[in-house]
Length: 409
Image 1 (tube, rainbow, N blue to C red):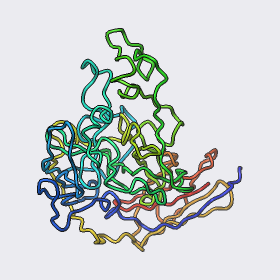
Image 2 (cartoon, rainbow, N blue to C red; image 1 turned 180 degrees about the horizontal axis):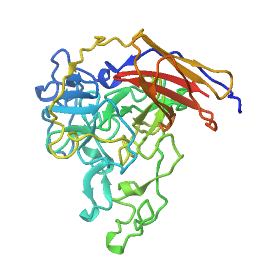
Image 3 (cartoon, rainbow, N blue to C red; image 1 turned 120 degrees about the vertical axis):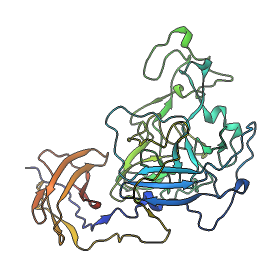
Image 4 (tube, helix red, strand yellow; image 1 turned 45 degrees about the vertical axis):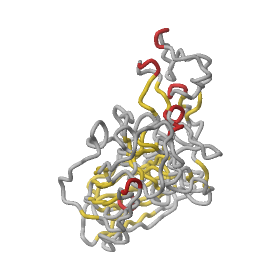
């Protein structure tokens, strides 16, 4: 049997899903502050259940916005009620495209839009125009602008929301996508395991080496009637989303513009999106979220007229600074034991004698092993023979209680 080179054992108490980052990361207006047009700013209320967070917002930030060159639209109160899952999961089926309109919400209640401006070359739905290129003239100093319905939004890095030049710290959570995964600013740990310096996360999308727009990034050869315009002049390379291709491993982030990694708010790891900017803080495609979501998306947040959900379950109102349900339950804890080989094990101790289910997850978010009907006081082997050495998260659940431990094997 192979010997493990290193096993880091952490004792982690119960983490109850009462007030975790998807609840506490919002900028809530507690003073009645108003902004553009005398409208209340930021988020007005956050409510939560065991499974969902409900965010009420006007879509107006607390910083100065406007003017918007060549844009006749003006921001108006959107009176949104977004519903965000507290249990985000990877979509292992047909991936969901990020649609037109809001695809997520910034921490101040302003909408996140995708990279498109809503138009395609010759209206054929093949060569989609990049909003940063074609609408950028109408962006204000905060890189936002209002849509025809008055919905103020950002297609790219919301530069007034956080300090996008500070490389001394990990960027904060600046929003959530509608699949429930967090959106961070530009800076993350050098390594996904939470080590190394802080640096800008690099997109893995690159401009294609093409001289004519006759093929798509997936290699599809178009017929002449579907060709895009000549490269140059009004349509430089990068004017259309199809001018880019995803090159796996060329950057830090995957095709969704995210990665599974440790962050300050998620010390056990989470899949997270990052906004992407260059050395001059200029936006880099795909800007926030890639063409498709990483996770599954609940109904009610996307599509025409969306963002006005109805709460149909018991909820608790989050009050900033409150503690809610205690985060630590001293009745239960996990002990991990190792004999110096691959046969590391864990035992659950719990005065309430609950049963648990669990998973062993790698740093890419892939499930390596499942545990069902775990009995208190019984020893369970963590690793199977042949498990690749690396960093893993052991996550055990009982109802709404979660025990998590990082294991470096």
